[in-house]
Every structure is written in C-alpha cells, then in structure tokens.
Image (tube, rainbow, N blue to C red):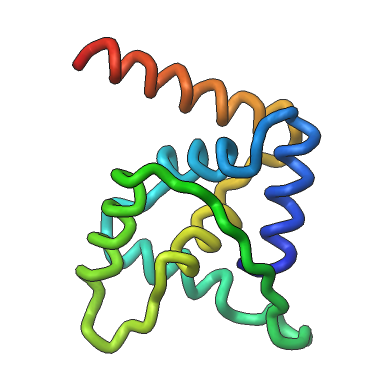
Length: 125
C-alpha cells in the first residue's frame, strides 16, 4: 500500500478509536466497485507517481479481511482482461485512497454505519 495511504489509514483509525482493519473493511464494503472498468481506474490512480515526484514508496500491511470480501475482490480482479497485472493489494489501496474519510469523526461514522448495516443484514437472514 502506498505509504501515504497507509499513514492516512493508521492516523484516522487511531484518532477515531477503531482498528485499521475495521476502518478498511468499512470503506471496502461500502465502496468496492461493481464493474471491472472502475477497478482499473482506482488502481491506476494510486499506482502512478504524482507529477514531479519519485516512485511511490509502499508499506506492507496485513489486514484481516472477511472471506466474502476477499472473494468479491478476487472475482472482480479475475474478470479483468488477461494481461492486467492487478492484485488484491492494488485494489485495496485504490479504494482506500479514494474513499478514506477526511477526519476522525467521519472515519468513526464509516465504521459504525458498516457495523449497523452488517447487524441488520444478519438479523434479516
């Protein structure tokens, strides 16, 4: 994950009083694209260095994502053209970079809204 995105995730989670994984899952569940075209856009937006800057520095993170979320991401990636060299980590970085909250309060709301939706879904099942 680009250092900039990893730092934002870490700082927002700490300030919001939630885990990085909880925040990442909330953002991914809410904003994971449904179309492969959007996958490419998100990945390319984070994969390119900004104009005039050096190569993107990355940080390896181990986020424990729910199985069904990993499966959905893998299905999206496998639907891409054969030559696409996009990995799950690229998709995660793209979604987080595009959709992480601007501040701790909004990050906390992202997590609580996800938890509320999940609870309603479980109760309806």
